Length: 193
Image 1: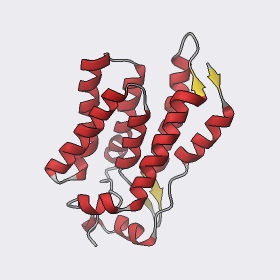
Image 2 (image 1 turned 30 degrees about the vertical axis):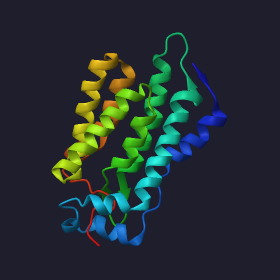
Image 3 (image 1 turned 45 degrees about the vertical axis):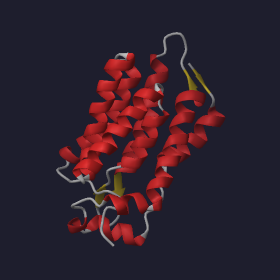
Image 4 (image 1 turned 120 degrees about the vertical axis):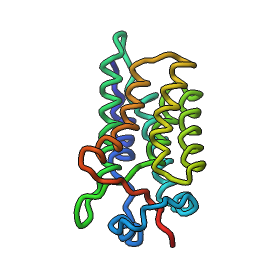
């Protein structure tokens, strides 16, 4: 395994330090009445979501394709890559403002998923996740559908492998945390104006 620290450190900065949340969104995160039903128009029009998608896409692409190169064994690189991305997802999911708030990082995880190897499978998973969310008019269906699409796409296109399981685990992390702490994750920009 080879590590390019000059590429890895900026990628860590992109992945580990979430975009600051403005006052309006912080207020929405603490008023549970504004979480349901998740309004996709507001979610799509919130600029912070698109910044999260872009920084996750760039950061994850650098980690997976430039900064950490697998050696002959390869597993150590996948563990390091998964750790860097997992900490990023954790930092994006758990926020603290007048108490702990869980945020469902739909855009962040879409960016991470699109940056991982096997773009056909990842694009299919992101498409399926967002399609189910839009069809159900509820953002809470995006991540489970994305995991199902990733599993089906992985099985049909490339077979199962360690990077695929890492990606499914990254998507499952916010869901697992919300179940573990019995909190429903909010969606940035999900509240009505």
